[in-house]
Length: 600
Image (cartoon, rainbow, N blue to C red; front, side, top):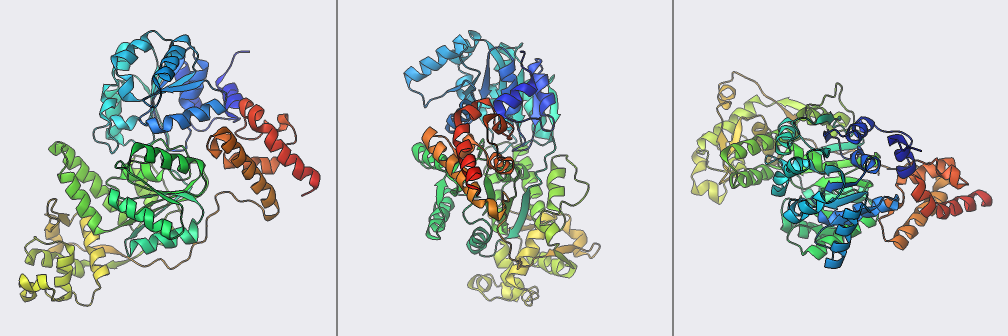
């Protein structure tokens, strides 16, 4: 019987229907069309090329930027009965030769290759002598020089169009604004590709953004009250901060591991493998970690420093809740983050146009942090997506912030920046405003200024919040080299009293939030739930694969609901395909039958 997209979906992947635009994409690529797919993390991008790979003759070549993740991706496909492999530097000479021969002989359905290997003349020649079903270019935003994950090797992937014009290509990413989408099209010669742009919304993620106020205490409270025992990621801007934060979290009782580009490759690989295969690991990392991570049960992503763009923020927070269950994205930020990021931008080796674009993106990120309205609406609007009503699942929707008429305070702040010569950072200006006779204030004779002490009744925290928001609104800029505050042209109208300014009043969050349950299980079903998870853990150790490669939590929950007693009934469970039913099914049926017969 001829296979169809739906039959492959059911028998290989264990799902009875497609989601969103998946079916249209699969049919387009299977029919030989090129495609550009923008789909949120967890939206099912992989199926969009894996199913055509099984329907078209030949082997699908998947361009993947991360060698460290290829083994896990291949293991997941092999567990489904798909003939999958990879070509990368982790293979021995013999293994590489065997895989190349298998590629030419048609013994693979899917093979993963890093971009730097793919564009080599040896690899191109190998592909010329193989039957290629399609090229899938994963994490396609890496081609964009404006982007946060730029990879120079992606710029050379136009060779696929030139050398194999008859082979369909599908480029996929979760993160691409209008400019990045156009660059992907131009760089990969996808001008005739069909475009499939799904909504960017991830409604299961609760976005929460707070000013830093003893950030470590804020983080530990968040983890202990809401995510104790959960897997998650904590992002830091520097390697040193990653190391210190991971060590501190371990002292606080968390199974925390560091990850950054300065660690030896074998340590990074070991930590990544533990994160993927264990249930409660907290990865503390720079942005070097995360792209391509396919762990479905990451329950939180916390940023201890502000990301440099909304694209980076969306990409990084999108690693939480890929299974669709509730997850939290917490961001703690301060004015020092803005100073540090602007200095990093000014030191970039990119062109002036590139630096200006980076500055614009940083400003948009700061504006998102300082919002008093629904964060999700603004986040989605940045990607030209529309959310008509406030989401109800971000901090500003759950606890709407108070606002106040800050016109007079803003005028005092801007006047003080002017009087101090626009040569100092926010701390010094706040000291002058509050009338603090610090050594620096006295040495600069700033205690003689007319603005000295005019804001004595306002706390340091409140002044700093005001300066952040004035920067977000464009009334202030920050010198890229020294971090000093600078007035902008737009502040003139505010200083003259021609405009008023309403600012958000920062308030400490006092409402204690309980642990958010990813999978809700009735109390009487908990023994069977734990037994199913224990069965999965045992099988994952036996086969040497992450637990989610066996079955996702959602599949275990479905088993709990339908209580299958035969292989045929088990096949009706979401995520159970032919190969998994044959390989793992009996073990789970034994657990289910034991509970059924015992009357538990």
